[in-house]
Length: 105
Length: 122
Image (cartoon, rainbow over all chains, first blue to last red; front, side, top):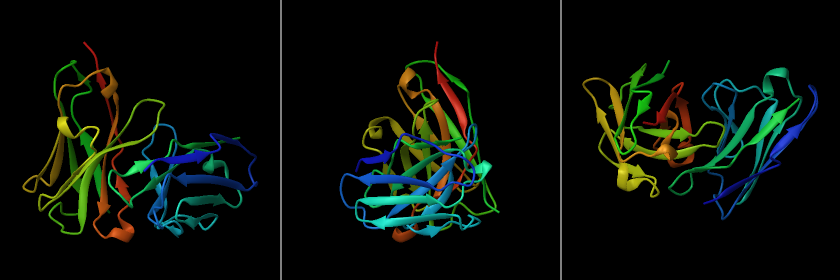
């Protein structure tokens, strides 16, 4: 299953709302996760099951969607939110990732 | 708190076998609820799942790498390992070990090691 993320880069300011998209080549139901990766760090899980926040994730992060179209929303960008975001499907092996969206200042 | 830590050579010769180990602390690798696996990321590029294995021996491998991969679990040392044979420069990447739940609805990668860079070069 191929995951296509858009846009490739999102240029925003702190306090603004970020909307990231992930589209699957076929339905993954709600078996979709989102991860945040900062330079030099491992990915950190944000969202699983399309809309459930992982442990310790602040509520400014929210996920939505089902089937083949998904959205990650960051309601008010904080300085620490500028990073690369990946979606990943766990509906069907091989588990696959999107190519990433970079959120930059 | 679960911690995963990769270890292994940072430089591997072309055509040789890449070998990495992931040490697990804060949980037992014999837990029946989890799969233990590997994900890699070429510098500046995206993520690629390599494979996963449960303690009971059930394995899932990425078909694109299946012929070259072996993942094993060592309960006595509470660690698991990756072997990738016949490496080329295309295998140069950060290698992450990660855990995922076996329950279908939550089988995302919930814990990650910090990653280790492996360079394939003569």
